[in-house]
Image 1 (cartoon, one colour):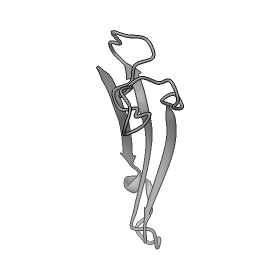
Image 2 (cartoon, rainbow, N blue to C red):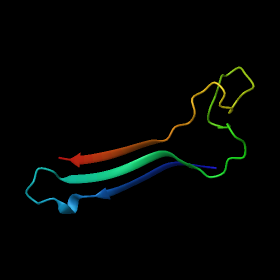
Image 3 (cartoon, one colour):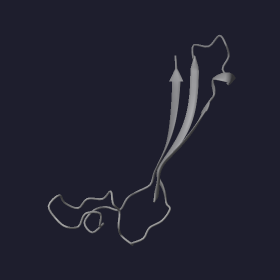
Image 4 (tube, rainbow, N blue to C red):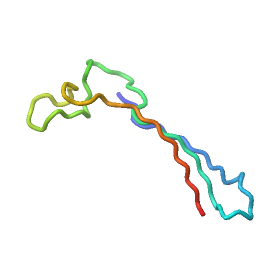
Length: 78
């Protein structure tokens, strides 16, 4: 089992003044590949594909390992 994506955000619009040109402001953070909850076999990722014509579906032999990524988003409405 895998926890694929985590995203959390906050609306900062209430901190804006009424007479500014910015109408909305949202800040959010995200993370991909957060956690592998249960891994029954080492070096096995069902989403990794080595080749379409071989018998190694899901085994991480010739592919890069699954990586974790982080990000921050800032959404400004004018």
